Amino acid sequence: MSVVVYTESWEGKFKKASFEAVSYAARTASQIGTDVVAVVIGSCSEDLSSLGYYGANQVIHYSNPDFNNFNPKSYASILTDAVNNRSAQGVVLSGSFNGKAIAPLLAIRLKAGLITNVASLPESISPMRVKRGAFSSKGFVVYESKQEKFILSIIPNGIGIVESSVSAQVETNESFSAEANSELVSVNKAKGSIPLPEAEIVVSGGRGLKGPENWNMVEELATVLGAGTACSKPVSDMHWRPHSEHVGQTGIAINPNLYIAIGISGAIQHLAGVSNSRTIVVINSDPEAPFFKAADYGIVGDAFDVVPKLTAALKEFKAQN
Ligand SMILES: Cc1cc2nc3c(=O)[nH]c(=O)nc-3n(C[C@H](O)[C@H](O)[C@H](O)COP(=O)(O)OP(=O)(O)OC[C@H]3O[C@@H](n4cnc5c(N)ncnc54)[C@H](O)[C@@H]3O)c2cc1C
Image (cartoon, rainbow, N blue to C red; front, side):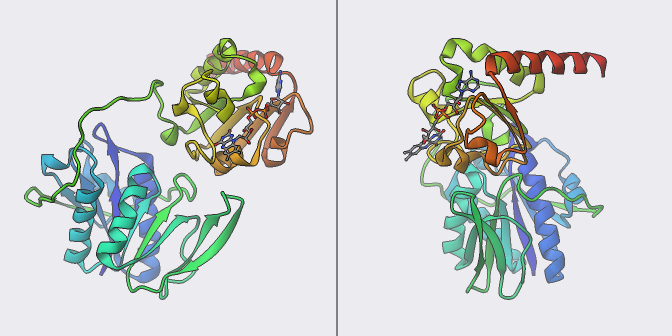
């Protein structure tokens, strides 16, 4: 018996969400009293044994080049193979775009109980009982699986990484093949160097910024912080910013360590996509703006006055440190 964990990489490098998933799987496995098998799919230039730092006992690399592009059906087949070969009790994966696509397919194949949006370590292992985020991240519920096997899809950047010092054995499987029901035809990447779901820091603007011509202020702050840029729905609806930056209930859900909201009122639909951020800073001229209730730090002031000063102060700090 083991716990299998799906790891994701991008352009050959592990994503941070993978370390979090391995670390979560390791802590779950230790509750069960079993080991962790990390599954790496497609080309990866990393030292695979480094997953031992996060608690993986074994790493299986499904290295067939057919798997270099993400395909939910074939990736679900690979994870099913790993689970069956190890008689694993369950699977852990990050609730990323890939994870969300694979998890339901895997649940059907393994006849497993799938719990998504997992927000903490299991409360009980047998039966599997765990707390998950609910009500657009405004509350929690506790779910219990009725199946023998479990699949836990964890909130990215929600639980944190605990380092370990396990020595991971690496095994390569070159021959496994799986039928895909679709194939990648072309790639059209969103502009901006930092993809929002991966960003550690996000600087976001709303209608309070008055027009697209004022976004240089947001971009300058984002550049100083090494942050991704985002916006509220009306901003993208009015084409001030691309739709790929729209965060919220109907946009992208993000989980950065720091979210800076400038001139955004904090409507419930916006909060639904950003309230999993570790720290929220709100800059708004209206002291009654609802966003302040969700903020860790708030600045009541005119964005056109506050943001340039904040950027200048950060530049000065960086120059001195
Ligand atoms: C079904 C549905 C789904 C939706 N999904 C989403 C979603 O996914 N994401 C989303 O964002 N919205 C979504 N909305 C829209 C949401 O309800 C709000 O209308 C929207 O979030 C408001 O955007 P805003 O805060 O940029 O603009 P506003 O509500 O106009 O707020 C602007 C804010 O800027 C402040 N401000 C003004 N001038 C300044 C200044 N000079 N300096 C500092 N602050 C200033 C104001 O005090 C105000 O708080 C959805 C709505 C519906 C009905």
